[in-house]
Length: 223
Image 1 (cartoon, rainbow, N blue to C red):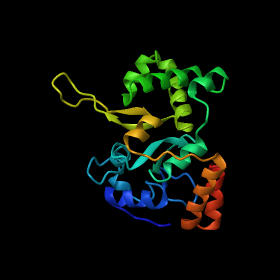
Image 2: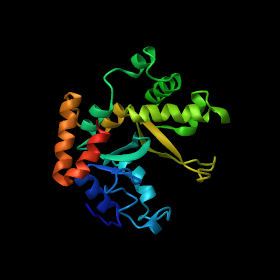
Image 3: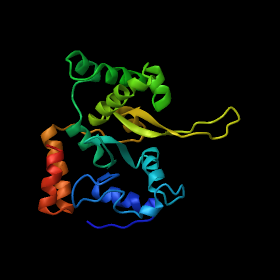
Image 4: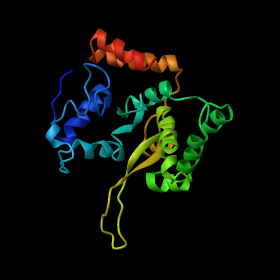
């Protein structure tokens, strides 16, 4: 599985072919967006900059994007996304998990805010959640990681910080959306399978494009 690409269109083809593409190396001998692109293209702020593509994949509905696996940023093709969601996701709602003590208060609160304002920008989200203080950043980040790890939310884009005159200023910030909202908006098919059936589908997919040893490594992720 060796790829070398330069354009966004080529990256889309890779994602559609392999289905799962981490931004940085995650599995030994498995591609990442970093490994298949030129290092010098990153942060070049050109059309060839993979750092800019990562958001475009999501805004274009090409792939789901978030820290879904091992707290690492992952792109999942729209074809595989429903199956990955079943395997990594949970049947119980965020509220039910909170009442059972299986998710933090911060994660519950963040989810409620995001679901009320889909595509909310990180700065606004942190403020609305009452986690603006410096010492609260870890709680904020942990809550977002919890929700991404169970695929309750995805990164849906970025929000530019602009002045009163409409001029761009400062750094852009990440925007979050619930998985259900993003999937519906981008016409992602809903699959009704058990975790075992969804996992089997994923393993068949990877068995068709990877060698046996690599399939074993991938299987551990979806165990």
